[in-house]
Image 1: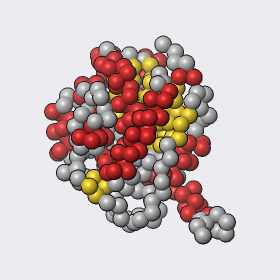
Image 2: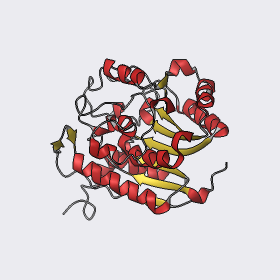
Image 3: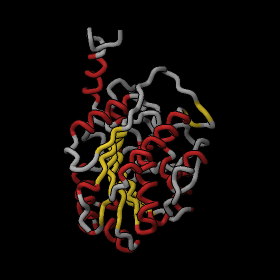
Image 4: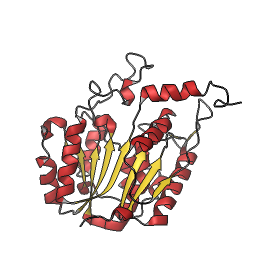
Length: 292
């Protein structure tokens, strides 16, 4: 099926609270500006700037209430259009909760999810307070009940394939095995889409939602990743799994998937254009532009 461009919703969601990093907001706004123009409807969810250095933690989740409000706003934006497909430009990884929840309800077991990410995003408040690391578990119906309530039809573990996943913690590894999720490392892929296509064919799904966290990319090749923060301490990202893929590899895999099935969801997250963000902060020091 060829998707009518007029039935593809572009959702701009410059959410930063899920990762508790205000710079995600600027990165998402820059991403929305440089992305190809939307041929169909476009919605931009208003996301407030950070006002305080310390955000409240409720039930183990930082900025819990603002995040629930943003999920409700994103869901409402999607429901206004009832699209066949959704392109989401974020923001932290939690931006994909409302879009994939919608697609799961719309397409049911005919939907497969490709989680293109260096991290599995299946933690809970007991493991990590930032909800962007909980999003895939929430989509599976696991986690904070108020977040899970926004997922009417949870995604089953055997409908999820990790693409480019690197090292995982014992908790994450056990979760993946317990729920029957599949994983392919960059080395498993070896630059080829065939392992992904073989899994997709075996699943029987004809619709695919893609979550593309840019941190799946090799930080030695790209300077727009969180781990490349020029202001971070040298050891700030020690022990945190890092991506090992090239953008061209990911794009080739997604094009091959699109030729095999209908890609009905694409979320791009965690874009950090550090020089643009520094200029944004500098502009705020100028007369007429800065706060008065």
